[in-house]
Amino acid sequence: MCTKTDKAAFAVTGITVLTFLIASRTETIWMLYPNVLIAAILYIYCIRRTDEDTSPLESSLVFGFAATLTYAPMDWLFSRKVGLIFYLRPDFLAHLTTPIGIILNWIVFVTLAAYCYLRLTMIFRTRFASESDTPKIGAMGTAMLAAGVTGIGATVGSHIIYALGESHLWLWNAAQVDRIPQIASVPIFVPLSFLVTFLLCPYLFGVAGGFLREQHVGVAGIRCGIFMGALQFFSFLLFYVWK
Image (tube, rainbow, N blue to C red; front, side):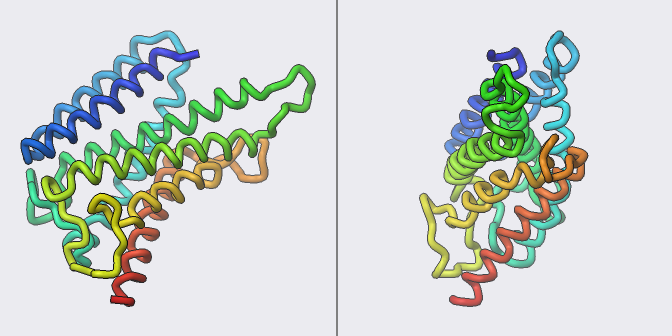
């Protein structure tokens, strides 16, 4: 059953893609702020005004903030020191950090991915439940299935967003490492890092009733940020050494 929160998540996803499409055409980073505002309004409305269970959304928001705040210093390293990515349209604190508008949109992205995983886990658990005491698919199985769908969605979504912003909002491979394979001007290890990271959602969050102990969503978010940053950095380093 599609809840009001699900509909809000779908709306935020569509608006986000549209926002980056417009931003890439107008080549202005300020277009990213309305997307964050709309997402915040919809999320707050769902949490405060709906009578349904909003715990997946609340947990996803904590996860999104934790993952983004953990990853942001690594992105500063990538952009300022390593030359993995160069931002073409600075906003606030241009010489100190990644553009604030992009960081805020990262929170939106990661929140959507986490919400997708948590909701799919709930849906699959209900879908594959049986009348007997033994479900058709165990807790680990439903978590892995949800992680697979989430990983694929995060891979496709991240590639679309990064491809839209390429040469308009940022420039990948500013260090000019020739051996990095690309798909639509996006280094292949970028969408792959999203795929691998969100395939590991059962490890990041833990699984109730499984052998992976459940983690606080904040801890799960920190794990996500560290793992994604490390995966991108070592992938880049591998190609850099081979250049």
